[in-house]
Image (tube, rainbow, N blue to C red):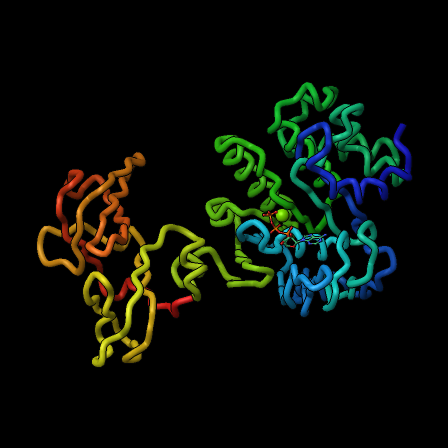
Length: 394
Ligand SMILES: Nc1ncnc2c1ncn2[C@@H]1O[C@H](COP(=O)(O)OP(=O)(O)OP(=O)(O)O)[C@@H](O)[C@H]1O
Ligand SMILES: [Mg+2]
């Protein structure tokens, strides 16, 4: 039987998600309307310009260890924002302070302009989906999806309608009577998404919901999440350590490193205009040449020779970042030269790995139109100088 007490109890259990028997993505459904929040009378008018989610100086310490340094976020209604970063960078900590599972050490959290810093998790206006958070194994798909509506005594006709709509949304209408053990991993994940969407939360938090899936299924569900985002208009805060997933899904990416926001911007801003070497190396492939700017300010002197730069301060120690698609193999004059030591075929294009005299290996994208180098061949490498991004060495 579904007991009302189960719902709050499900909260701390979600933290132990890796030990749960049914290895599926799960949804933790929190109340849509803040229980005690004073919602302004003209809420819809206010909602148009009030950010959905604002963090001001939000931080988390565990004893002396700072898992999250003071962090500011400003997320608009309907945005899809991804927290991206290496393991241990503070993504889950930030997400859990937002959903109320982890109390912040300092700072403030506003949802729809209302202070929710100290609101209990289950009274926050959001749906949460965790990786590996179990579906209830003894309940059918439709019972799993209905759970949160059931405990809140939503009339049964309405529950049937909303569960039907949610299962339709994730393409599982014909699986309503099955048990989780009778579903594939991807189908279980979709049930968890339906459990989240049935509650129609306007703010949805997802912590690596696709982490356990193979590449093909991940890509399918990425498209599905993107579609659900468009259809529901909800605001998403999504966690991943997979940069391709972040680039594919996000309106904006919040790149995290060592408990801090390294850069927060659109995928194009992060890819094309990384502000730090760490951002440049985390997103996409970057060729990085370290050097010192010469006295004229027009050349970066590297271990493999001088490369042309503009707008650099003479004497500055900098890193030049060149993306593989901006570099090409040249028969004529070249900026660098080296020996081809690997060619990686990837369908419509290949990546050619060229070892320079210093031992640095540079990656160049080769499309079908360009000449075929061979392994061991000495080649020149060139690029348009304005494609070089100069960054401080970290
Ligand atoms: N309860 C805790 N007590 C002490 N340290 C913690 C606690 N929870 C997290 N941390 C530490 O805080 C840091 C950030 O952890 P967090 O779980 O936010 O990382 P993450 O970016 O989500 O990593 P992953 O990609 O591995 O999930 C880590 O160094 C972690 O060990
Ligand atoms: Mg995590």
